[in-house]
Image 1: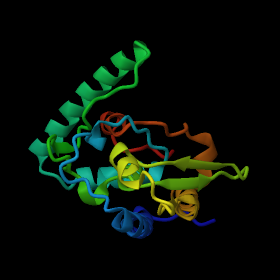
Image 2: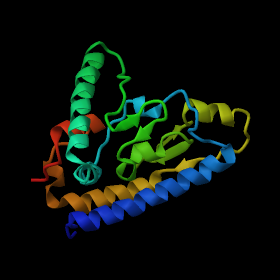
Image 3: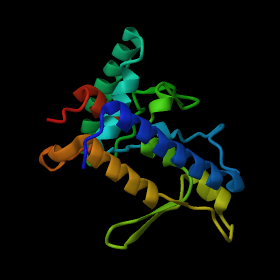
Length: 200
C-alpha cells in the first residue's frame, strides 16, 4: 500500500468529514435537533481521539492561526491537561472546556473546519458495528434523547462505513510504521501539548 502525502491524505479526510456532516444533518433534520441554546456544551465532554491523520490535520489548521492565538490555545491546552489529570486521579471523569472553544456560552470552535470526527458526530443517535459483529449504539446527547422520546422510528447514523474509510486512510497516511508507533489515545488538549504527531 503506497503511503499518501499529507496533502493527499488531508483531502481524503476532508471528504470523509463531509460525509459525516451530511449523515449527521440527515438524522438531525427529522428529529428537529439543533445545538442552539443548548445548556450542555459538548465541548466540555471528555473525548479521546485515535488516529494520527486527524491529529496531523488538526495541526495543519493550528499552524494557519495567528501566532498569538496559537499561543493562547497552547496555554489553555496545558491547563486542560493539568485539570483533566487531576480529575482522573480522583476517579472522576474530566469536565473541562476544550482549549479550541472560543465562546463557552455558544460552544464555538476556533478550529471548526479542522474539527475532529467525534466533534462532528456527537449528538444524534448513531451505531457502530465492530469487526466482531457486535453492534454498539449511542442514543444521542441529552437534548436528542428528549426530542426522540416516544418517536417510533428514530433516525440513526451508521458510523461503520465512515470508520472503515478512516481506518484505511490512517493506514495509507502512516504507512509501514503504523504497528510500531504508539497507539493514539489522546484528548485534543494532549495533541496540542504534544505538538504535531511523529510518524517515525
